[in-house]
Structure formats: C-alpha cells, structure tokens
Image (cartoon, rainbow, N blue to C red; front, side, top):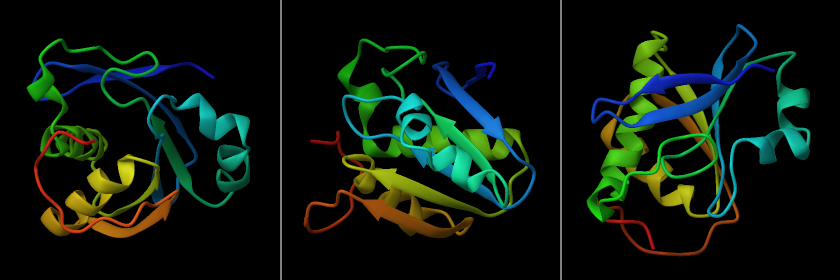
Length: 136
C-alpha cells in the first residue's frame, strides 16, 4: 500500500492510507503507535469491504512530521488535522475509531464538529470533560 500525505493548515505533513469507497471511517492510533497498528490487527482488512477506511499517523508519529513546539500538540490542533483530511476529500460525515489517548481528541471533535456521525472509543480511561489542552 502506498503512503499518502496531506499538509495540515498549520503546515504539518501528515501520513495516511485510504482504502475503499463507501462510508468514511478514520482509524486513529494510540500513543506510542502509528497507523500500521490497524493493519497488524486486521481492522483495515475487515472493514475495507464495506467502508472507506482512512488510517492516519498523528503529528509526531509514524511518517508524519514531528513539530518541535509543544503547543502544536493541543487537542484542538490534533483534532483539526483530522478535520483537514476530511475536508481534503470532501467527506461530509465520518466515523472516528479512536484508541487510547486519541479518545480525548475524538470526544473533542464530536463536541465541535457536526460532521462526526459516530465515535468508536477503545482503551478508554474514565476522565471528565473535553478541552483544547495538550493531551496527557
């Protein structure tokens, strides 16, 4: 599979894979991982027949750029990067599959953007609230 790239509004290059041509699902890895993790556990293979699957490397992970300023890693900026990929493909409505610390970003997006149809959260730690902070 060929790695694709898109540049976010704040000039961070992001790596992703796109497979399929139906309802769009973003698979977003957890901390210390990358988009390849979704392939390794066969999620992409199982979903690709019925859905469009976009697995992406968050900023600073996998083949995506690694900004050096800590403020480039706020929940809002990371969430807007996912939104930018949806914008680039004209995706009107999408589902986010989030693992581990991306849960916070997924929850943030769901409160800010009406285009999120569903969020599937895995490895969730129980925490209150949603804010535009640097994920911990």
